[in-house]
Length: 437
Image (cartoon, rainbow, N blue to C red; front, side, top):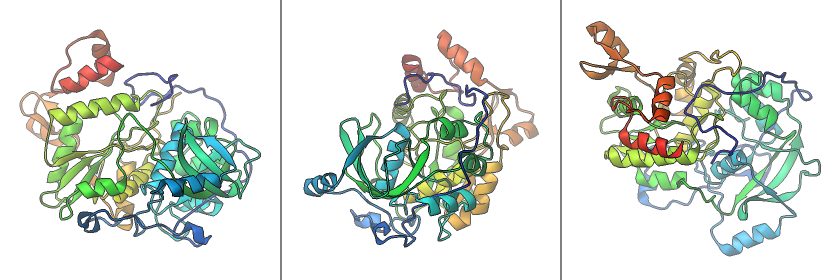
């Protein structure tokens, strides 16, 4: 799924980037489009069609109150929408993820790309103009000088029409300011800042999206409405986000999270990996998907559900934790596991962490009640010879012998065809990695 130029490596914390200056482009400006703000009547959120009584009774309320569904249902409607377009554009992989989450309700209550007012509110205040919490801006970027407010554009993925967008405004963002506020830094050694500086176009546009067809992917991505149909309506649903293959420690972490006092009895966990663009050194989404599928079969568990999210990572630490929580809220989750250094990143030059190990956890705890999602701090698990996986504190108290395997050593063993200890990784996952990386 990622660009073919990206390295098929297991490294998750290194990011190769040139250490060049990131210069601000114009005055500090901002954008926005909120479905809950009456900028224009066409931005009123569309309630999702309820497919079953189970969906009606889903325990978690969508963000903003209503689950957005912008996808047209009939061929006649789609043909009429396409006929209104005067231009067409190819979506980048990141734009494709954003369009999909706008039109399927994953970004509820948004009904389009953020206009300048909403963009500014999210960048400065972590909220939409009406005060509803929102972690990161969702924008449509372009270098096209001729693209203007009022244009209705057909957005395509190859030959497949995905959506139309009716642009309402066009503005030049201060990208350095945006990165400083959202990522905590404007250094392009940060992968998110590098993406904004080098991948995104000069201009941002706000506009209303009309959905035509979901993308065709190697990994199936159910809509929030479809996922909600599969979830129990009378127990807590704990979301686990990941962007890498799941190894033993991860599995122990999310299954044990169901025993946390914050989670009610008989809760279930929704393992919901992101399979869209991420850091250049991460495993491509299609390979990650294969590892999840074999692991799902190997570890079949009625209290564990697996779905896939078409989301493009920013590596924004605390702000991205909020973004993930609100998305999973729309998918029906009541709780969200926050790991150490969630969505964190290191400088590609110095190797220094941009965020503290618990910054994301602390921010999630601060905003959890307002967001309506309960953060569940992840356990710090270690493997011991005597008792298997236990918390680090327990291992220290009992004087247990810890076994460790560094990421570097794991990659060396993987490439060299050496046996990977089963306490560290599942055989099925190792097999997929060796065949595809």
